[in-house]
Length: 326
Ligand SMILES: [Zn+2]
Image (cartoon, rainbow, N blue to C red):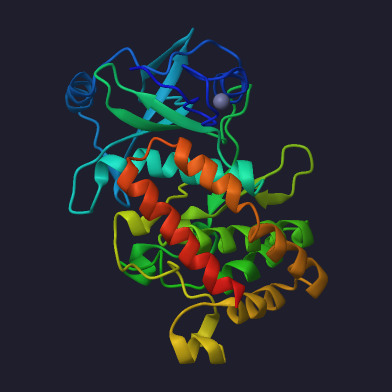
């Protein structure tokens, strides 16, 4: 498996993980970008272990643990999450790992959003998978207490039906952040940025379980966890709605939304003000989130997506970007 860009940060002239990515992903251990087992071998082990594959959205997830310099499959004490290509009805499924990797890298590198450390890794037979480091496992091996917003809002399939992860609004998540997070002024800006990011990069499946709080070891209060599961869903589910949840609670719609049925700049201005972000900060965030196009293009080109989807990815970004310029 010859590669030319780092399968972590996508910077060119790297035939494996660069130094920085080895540090971020594996604490500096020289881990190869090719796993020691093939995809069929992996499927066989999973079947024989009798473990049930958990299907979250369109993706399968498995746990890995680092033993010396080697990643091995594990049922317990996983340090990494591996998402191989899964099968199903959606389009371009073989491109899902490259898409998630690219989207996570753009979030972190271009927009400085805190994300789980991640990369592309290959099975021994060359098939790519997405790998991310579990941020809830501390260096000591201890697990951080974290709760997603389905838990925080006390919604389950039993209490709120099959659609419970989607039957909520981003405004209401903001209200819960206000209620539980002391560092609200700082954390709510991160939250606003990720909603804008999800819109710009067509992450149309950011539901209640894709946002979480954890308890800070040092201060003992609640903070947003790093962001995860960021992916441009429009490449796999064409025609999906722009956002997974309604932006506003109780069916509120802005005038512009009523006219076009699309979220545009006035919606985000209203949203920011409802979150309690003042105008000056809001403007600064807009300017930052609407810049970086050149770096976005650079990362798309260096990504592991095929050429057809590189074009589509850039198109979807340009289209959303344009909507926010007006
Ligand atoms: Zn790198």
